[in-house]
Length: 203
Image (tube, rainbow, N blue to C red):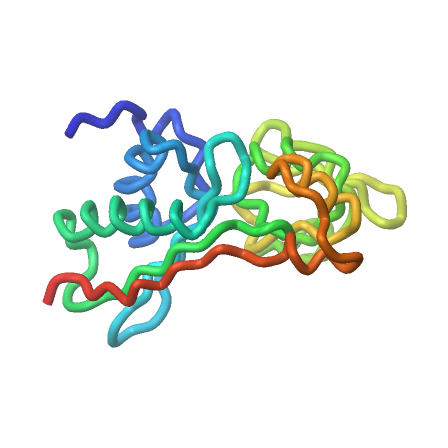
């Protein structure tokens, strides 16, 4: 099936090696189905688990039914492409509310919210940063630190970054999802749909 979305046109998370290859294979199909790849990890040795974290293209959280659709689509591609020798498992989940920030568009979308980030390569002698997201520019994530200064974090050097769960973030996520907060502590909105069909790959 022809890909309608070349990977060069898709804002993918920064990955390398096997994870990058898998992401490039499945991302166009997921986008055709109305989903975006947020994060992809391959964990384990004997029977590796391919973890796919996704959102709907409109930014809303995915449901268990969405996880099933993504699992079927990604599984079909991986069965053909066969990037991992032997058996493997596939796990699909929503990015959740206090989600990872893996792409430039994530930093743009969540400007104004709190986040924490850790770099592989130190910037001005430090690896860990926390503060208010300001957006992204020229391949760098912009963040206003707790001391009021601003930092520009190269996206390719970010080891991990995640939103900090706050009342404002819960409210914004609930509004996007079209639901209201059920509990004062936001427990209802924190539930993250997840599907692990324990589907073995080719043997």
